[in-house]
Amino acid sequence: MKTDSTPIYTALAELYDTLMDDVDYEMWADFIDEVIQTHHPNPVDVLELACGTGAISLCLARFDEYNLTGTDLSPAMIEKARQKAAEQELDVQFRSMNFLDIDIDQKFDIIFSVFDSVNYLHDETEILKMLQGCYKILNPHGLLIFDFSTPQNSLEAVDYLNNEEGSFGSYRYFRKSTYDPHNKFHYNIFDIELMDNDGKTVLESFHEVHEQRVYPLDQMLSILDQTPYHQVAKYEDFDLVDADENSARVTMVLKCQKQQ
View 1 (cartoon, rainbow, N blue to C red):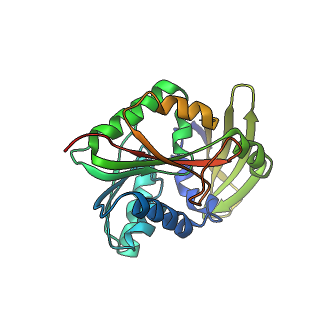
View 2: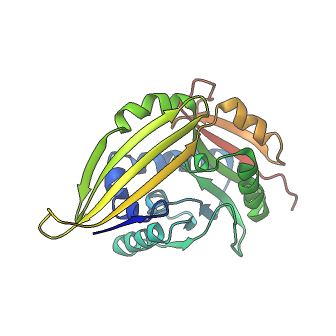
View 3: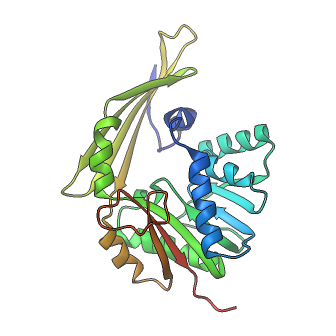
């Protein structure tokens, strides 16, 4: 047996869809579509950052209105997304890309990122870098849509996420989840094992530590005030309802102010 320390979403890519089995991706895609249609008439080219295994983009592809590109830092997650697109016969382009180093030769009407991906950015400098990179590839009046989790979300989620275990195929996992309210960091630590066909022998072990910075709404708004974006809306959870300091998840909608 060999034990490896792996980059996040490497070994976990094999289990990710199992972990997210209770997530209603169609509802989430409907919400993103509603936000887009509310604030941007007739968009065409849409980019997802940190798309994971592509669930949201693949749901949006069924609307047949958008030219969709999904990107993620993890090549393993992108490979899973491509497999799913092929199986579902959906036309979404997937590629590996770090959203702190956006390198794509195309402009977009919409850029979006969901499920706390921005919380993987651990300080103001990283968030500003991501925002600047998006601004460069947005068309004039294009929208950037992203969500982030707040301290309220971590306080609610840490108990039911902690000590979670499960399996899929030849893999099994155990998750430890903790929240540090003083430093505002949420940690999800996964121990993953690849089992032999007998289900008893461990062939390989992996250890992934996921560190997310948790941002109160007022701190995120302060960061956004330093950018050239126009704030269009801040929504709570999955409704077009204005978020406040008690919201567990906030979806920001920003408009690119560039001229034609």
